[in-house]
Amino acid sequence: MECSFCHVFEDLPFNCSYCKLVFCSSHRLPEKHQCSQLYRVHKPRETSYQQSTPTFSINNLNSIDSRINRILNTELRQLMLGMILVLLVGISFFLSNNYSYSAITILILGLVLMGSFLIHEMSHKFFALRNGYRAEFRVNSMGVLLTFFSIFPFVPLKIIAPGAVVISGYPSNSTLGKIALAGPISNIILGISSIFILLSFSLTPELFAIISTAAYINGILAAFNLLPFSIIDGKKVYNWNKYIWLFSFLFCISFIFVVSNII
Image (tube, rainbow, N blue to C red; front, top):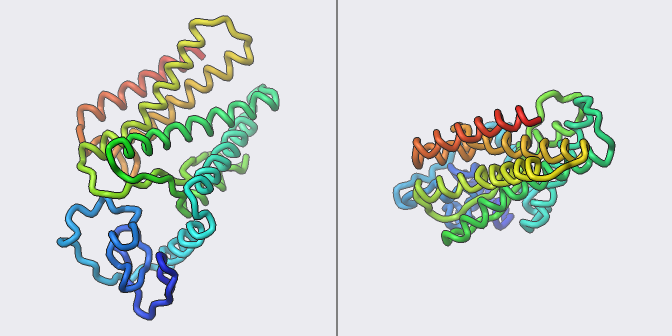
């Protein structure tokens, strides 16, 4: 098989137990191949790097991930792919839900969703950089696939997960939780700013609909990302401080309730 880092063919490749990709003997350690899950490796000397037997489906996804990373070999290209997919999902959502919006309003709402996604991810990135960790946005094959299918109007459940900011290094639970919380906080700030505009200015019905929907979108993004499951931001916040997670999540739910009453 081909090494995912240097692309040299290896008869007996090593499988990384963290990112699940395959590597040659020279790049089998997470530190050697810049593992996307490096933050999970607390003490490299205590980790066993035994060869595992991946399933066929995982091998396929690893191969796709490797190809995507070779084609989109810069963070900007991967971020642009993610943003375009999110924009198309947003347009599809407002088209398929029979809203009485004009074409330009639907496009603006799609851009609002895309911008909210971008600010969320960049908040993770810049907070991580501020704390001295390398952080880059990376797409992943499963997320891209799910987001792509969400573009089609006949798909009822829209999933927006083309990728995420990957952190390299060994952040503590506290630092990792704060980096994770930065994304939802950015959405709440955007939502509160939208509410301020709604309450402070006299707006046309169409502009009112756009800004109120922007507030609702950011509330949903913040609440969803604070769910304490799997690799979602909420899990990292919960592992760091359960009380901060509970306060943040309840605040987001309350915000959505307030926005729903305003709309």
